[in-house]
Image 1 (cartoon, rainbow, N blue to C red):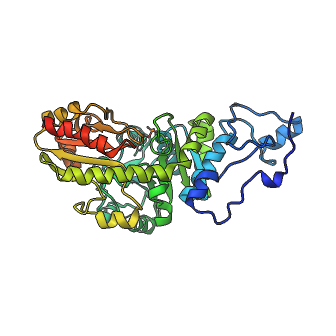
Image 2 (image 1 turned 120 degrees about the horizontal axis):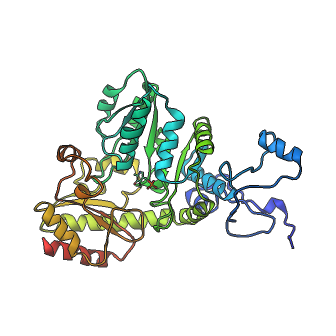
Length: 403
Ligand SMILES: *Cc1c(COP(=O)(O)O)cnc(C)c1O
C-alpha cells in the first residue's frame, strides 16, 4: 500500500544551511513511501506511462529518468550533496577516481591542446597522461607543484588545463591554489584540483578560485574502505561536457556505491578532524624520536609551507611521511616490525596503513625520477586512521626499535 504524503514535507528546506547540515541532508529526495534514509534505486532502466511520454523523456522535453547510465536517483542525490559541500553548481559521479580524471580531460581537451600536470600527482594519473592522452595528441608538461612562477613560465598559447593535487602524496607539498588559479586564468586555462586528500571538509578549492574539483571517493568520502567511486564538480557549463562524455562512454557510478558514499559524507567532517588530530599528534611525536631524520606533514611548524597550509586548509589531513636513518633495509625493517597497522598503499580508511613509496607506489619511476620527486629509499608513508593514538604510537615504536 502506498501512503500519501504531503509533498511539501518530503524535502528539507536547506536555504542558508552550513556544511554540517548539508553533509547530512543535501540532495536527499524522498519517495511517497516517506522513508527517512536515502532510497537506493537498484534499476537499470525506467518505464514510461505512454509511448508519447517515452518520446518526450528521450527528447529531453520532460524531465525524468531513462536509463541508469544517464541518470539514477540515488547517484543524483550523491552528486547534489557533493556539489553542496564543494560549493559547486553541479557535480557528476564516476565509477572511480581515475574515471573522474579521465572524464574531465576527455570532455575539456582535444588533440593539439597542452596541459600542465604537477610532477607529484597520483601514479595512475601520470600514466593516464603519459601513456594515453599523449597518444591522442594532448601535449603534457610537468611543473613542480609549489613553484607558481614555474607554472607561468610553462604556459603556451594552447594551454587548456592545469591539474594539481594539493597537498601532494607522499611528501605533503602544497601549492597556493588562489595564486595558481590566477596564473591559469591569465593564460586562458582552467585549474583542476584533485581534492582527495583534504576533501571539502578541510579545503574547498572552488572557493579559492579553482574551476573544477575531482575526487577519488574511494578514499575519505567513503572513508571505510568499501567502495570505488569518483566525482567531478564545478560550473554547469563544464559539467555538462563531463556528463556528455560519461553518458556516452559509460564509467558512471553504481547506485549502491553512491548510497554508501552518501552515508560516508554524513560523518566526513567529524572523521577528517579525527584523522587530522591523530596525524598531527603522531607527526609531532615522530619528530622527537631518535632514528627519524625528517617528518613531512604540513601541520608541523617545521614544514616549509605550514603558513600556507593554515591559510588554505582547516586541518592538515591524515597522511604523514617520514625518513628513517638508514636506507631501504631500515625502512623495510621498520614496516615489518609493526603488528597492527596494515601494510598497504591504500589510504582514506579508518584503519591506519603503512607503505614504502620507493618500492610500491613510486616503484616504476627510475632512481633519478624518484630522487627528483624527493622519494628516498628511507621514506615511509603512514595514512593515519581512527584507532587510539596510544595504540598507534605503540605499534610505530616497534618499528623504531627495529631500526
Ligand atoms: C586513489 C587516488 C586516485 C584514483 O582513485 P581510484 O578511485 O582508485 O580510481 C586519484 N587521485 C588520488 C590523489 C588518489 O589518492
